[in-house]
Amino acid sequence: MKKCLENVRKNVPLVHNITNYVTVNDVANILLACGGSPIMSDEPEDVEDITSICGGLNINIGTLHKSSIEGMMRAGKRANELGHPVLLDPVGAGASKLRTETALNIMKEIRLTVIRGNISEIKTLVQGSGTTKGVDADVADAVTEDTLDDAITFVKAFAKESGCIIAVTGAIDLVSDGDRCYVIRNGRPEMGKITGTGCQLSGMMTAYVTANPERPLEAAAAAVCIMGLAGELGWSRMQDGDGNSTYRNRIIDAVYNMTGEELEKGAKYEVR
Image (tube, rainbow, N blue to C red):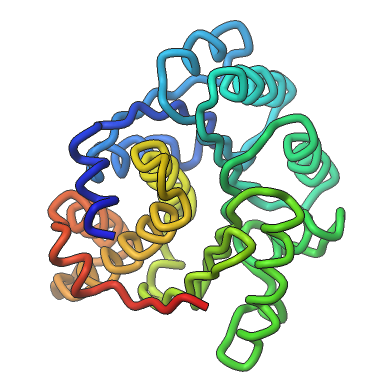
């Protein structure tokens, strides 16, 4: 994982983000913090040129409109032509027909490198429908120690079927390419009180996969570990009177200051 971090800092991957307007600034900042470089564009007439000069594409369906959907499709197909990695963050898939159908159409039309979401969103993509409550995972769908074995089997099967890396994030994170599955236990529950930690992770994960083309699974898992570890470090530095806004900034600062040695020491994972 240390090598993955070093490659991001060395290569400074340029990432095209078609992301939601709730978190676009935080996604840009986390990309800068981790060592990457962000560009944001969802205008259909603009996206193909922007994707062409970038190394990777991050598609986030959190605030959809007809124009951005067209932009996602155009950018995704251009990225495929260029052989660039493409990540899909199916925010809120299952909460509405538009979100679900858009995510499924992206999966059908675009060759994806990674799909990153919570367990409810990922289950929706597998089943074609879902019961996602907003953008947070259903409690019944949470990955716990009791459900871990079944969840690993589920994620591995979907990764194999879809032909891409599946990253399920929550209290316990799972990242699989169909053969191996990283089980990651970094993070803090308080991260759920900040809007956009998942969106930030998707941006950073795109940078990591882009900068580490020979080891995409490890790179995706490293990004998850870094985000969770940053949540732990940021929380440990909270002061009296600090709240979720300060916590957001402390997480970004922790990503900015993280070293490969710190990551190797603090990452909590096993491979199954």
